[in-house]
Length: 431
Image 1 (tube, helix red, strand yellow):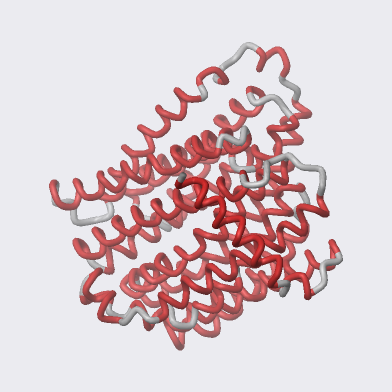
Image 2 (tube, rainbow, N blue to C red; image 1 turned 180 degrees about the vertical axis):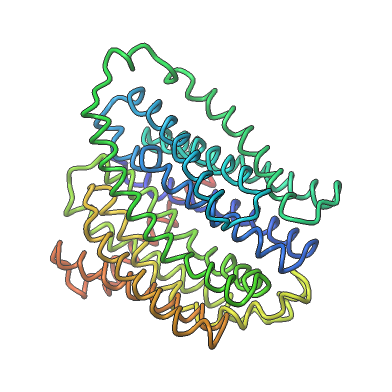
């Protein structure tokens, strides 16, 4: 079990890592927006969304489900099936993209390779999280983004590549280098003799079942977060998608806080058998996430349109207008992000499935009604409604499952104690 301040220290480290990652993503977005404009930014957004779907299917055997399974199985029995599955999914994805014509033919293979490489990087990160080596996992998450940022700047400004291929080349090289580094760090677990000696098909099937349910939750969440991008882009054009997705990137940076909390809390619960204590800790962490996220959103609300035009270019002047209805949804979705870590850590996925299905249905309904008439504002309002439905429904199930009264969520005394512990940890870290 983590000692008194270990949880806070790991959360702070993860927040700093995610904050740096967001800054690097901001630089990438800025370079693409200013150098190539909204249309190319929209092309890159569709590209990223596509390989995210590949990554999510690959993660059935190689994603963060490994964090839950690793304390209960041998690592060497998990690695090779995860690699093979990632390759299989990438081949299927290539065939689907080739025959469906969702993307131009000349980028289908690069996108598929990016999906495969991202899957392998994700496997390595999950291994270190499962071993509670948070600092190594954070560095491995930061490395490809740092290399990708350098690569994008070189491609767009040095080689004058003015289309999505500048992003593709930089991403392929950065992921390739990261895989080499990650492979070196886990080299003692690769192709070990104990795999053939100890492998049981029943263990693989158990991993597959847990991973399938886990990734079903994740895929439903991805649909809830990103499916309407396709509707906005296909119906209204990639220019609107480029503007809106820039605003989304800025607002979702607020989720650095709850996602960092969620990651560490998930790993901690995976190694714990004191579920009621962890449920109460979940409420305290949720309070912290909501307060910090509300403060960050308040600052972003007062950023004027001129700032977006100055930073990203005149074509992005409407960013603030496009996301004004999304602020409440970003805040309320803290509920889903932090509470979900409890259910992930306990392997109890049913509430996550239910809440995400409700959220996706809401998104499909509201985006169909609002996007054609209100375009970007309609997309933001549809997303907010679906985020609220998913978050509130999961919070309600969590409260009923563990008999947590509403007063616990509003307990300011426990919130003050939690912040005092965080401040004490920050002070001790400086000394």
